[in-house]
Length: 362
View 1 (cartoon, rainbow, N blue to C red):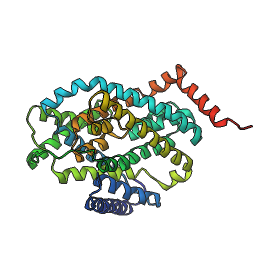
View 2: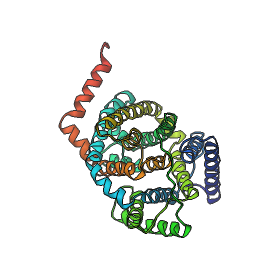
View 3: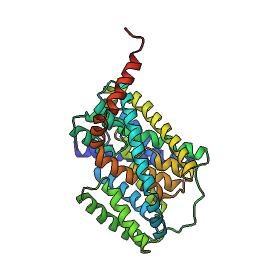
View 4: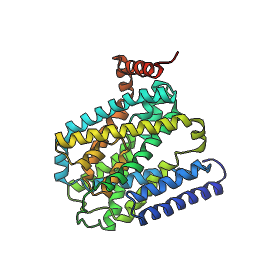
């Protein structure tokens, strides 16, 4: 925490007040994922305007815990049994997304004028914080990675839900009753314990994964039956959206304007490629197109899970795709970099893109 306590508290209150107001406005006009998008835009706008907003770790974890618990409530025994059959496709999708990211990273490096290693970890669809730390451990620059990772999650949240709603890619809600408040308290307490154990075990994204495992287990054994009350789910979305927005700082954008602009273009390209992949899955694997889009999207686990919940799509299945990818990406990121470099894939692409960019120049 920097500055005085009163100043910190004032900025925190201002940030969350703006987040709630813009979230309410977005909800009032029926914007998809309003309680994530509104807070995200509000906190990002304040940050870009020069106000450094606090981003309490406890608040972010609380938001992740709520989203994880919400996902877990959808994991009935029948759903869990059905997920096993999708595991090969989940693994293939994760590998394909890594290849798409690796290929895109060579273009980012060339046109944003950053080194290839930094570009690789900047666009790899892993954790917002994890990719910066993992990249820095092998000599990549953390600041561009942090900026582009934040742009990746924000861009996808701002783009995909509205496009899906505009094209009718959602389903009607099922008549599922809210979980009683006493059971909500029990579920969140159990999820907190599971998240803490997952954190101690060094799981990736433990505050989401641990909550999913614990709540999913309770649901699969019929201990919990129902959905997360909308008010609590809304709080989780606000905390997630606000936290993403606080990652946008004026100083970072001033230092790396070219990286930010090229980064957005590269992310848009990645989204387009994965959308085409989703279309292929729809035809080849007979998976619903809306489900395929969210399952293969290079967005964050919590954000895509919240999107699936809002659009009434199979939350457990979509989240499982992202959990598998997160484990494979965060756990093996440096091996992908070394392996793709060792076999010549990345160096060859870098030479080809560099040659093409220099064609016709003296």
